[in-house]
Length: 175
Image 1 (spheres, one colour):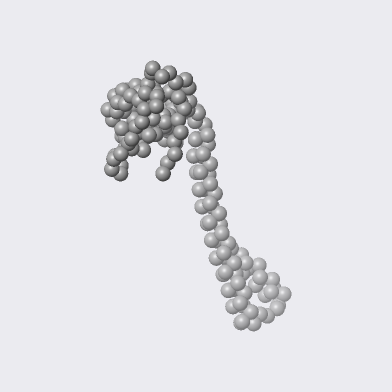
Image 2 (tube, rainbow, N blue to C red):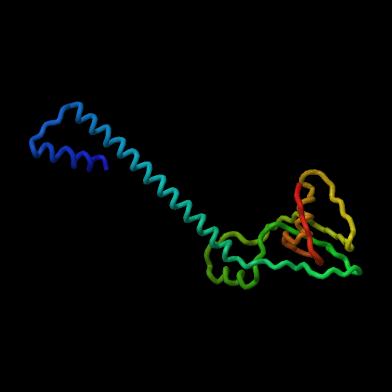
């Protein structure tokens, strides 16, 4: 860039026989240097931005391709049946994928965004039975699983084993 700029300015002047003063030459070289520096940094920044944008678009497209999860919560509430019933439940964080999408991922045989559940359970051996209008108070130390339990009751975690039944509507208000 700099060499092309120097040749485009100095060669025509020399071929026409025009003389440049030493001050004009240094000023012109300084301007070309700053022009080269700015164009070079702009090119690097734009290439980095394009690469990052491409990665973000790919990740978003993978999330948008995921099937929408439909909750297993039953709408009707029977006063004789528990509103929340979990038996020997084990839950983890992660995304749910359908069997159809899992087969498609294997057939494509390429790297995909990780949409599988984590292998580490956040809750293990949980058994709860709450009847309608029961009150449950959850207390414990930081990191003991209070929020994970509430998210499980809202059907936001992934069941690894056990059974659960959730009935009725739910309202959740954080701190």
